[in-house]
Image (cartoon, rainbow, N blue to C red; front, side):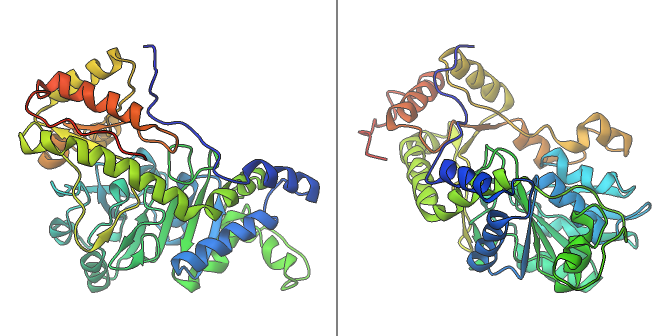
Length: 391
């Protein structure tokens, strides 16, 4: 495929290269230097999180979260099947069992109305996933968790700078996780953060993050030497990544506003196709403030989705679909799940299509994508063509 409009494209928003050079000049590029501290402080202050630890990826943050809540063999964790594999891997690598629950047809988030029926005496936690930067119904999820004595770990990989009832995603559960992968809103290539909303977990989180040692306490003068005190791994990111990320976080609102304009441009120009019943646009509940992480459309059936995907690729436009539901995967089948177990998940996963959306996408590139969608759906005559506006 000759791609002329990529699905995603990394970008520089401000002082990324300058800060990288500064990190080298300061003589610390291994990790936990000035820029790591600055990133954590900014996230804590901006989102009201008691403690943030920068880590190499959201996968690493999820793994740490699973260790911190003490998951082990025989335990069960409730989560959606419509998510990236890292959410489930963090659970199964400790011997616990993923209990997949269906998603809501409007937001494609974990269906809060089905959670309580999935709770058993073995249930230890709920891992809600905030799809597309739209919050799950966290008030109800937290109420269920408190009723049954469960931990809540928010997978907010897509939810940085998004809010539910005025609270930042990642700041509501016992723990939250962020991603700064190059496909996300704020990037550093590979990167993530663990949000510690329960202060009692902070000390052990520092130990797990630093290979199971109490080196952080040693550097603060709290112990006279550091040693191996717990299990852990190398969850400290490079200061080079932190320097790049800090420049992005400094531009938090500017980047968000840019993505808002791209998102609204798609929405405005595709609305006539939704009115004609040819596709469905994303839904944002009143209690949610999204971060415009991605723009997806839901086609009428999988044949229409796959056909449109091939058509766009033929035009050099890289759209993508996701996810293959985890419960229907080979690993999901090893846990006894079969196709048909989660009908909404299976339906939407076969109809969803993500459109190109990145910081530097132009109105002309968006209009090319929209025109190609109209052409394939045979709706060009019935849909009013809007004049491109400055983005």
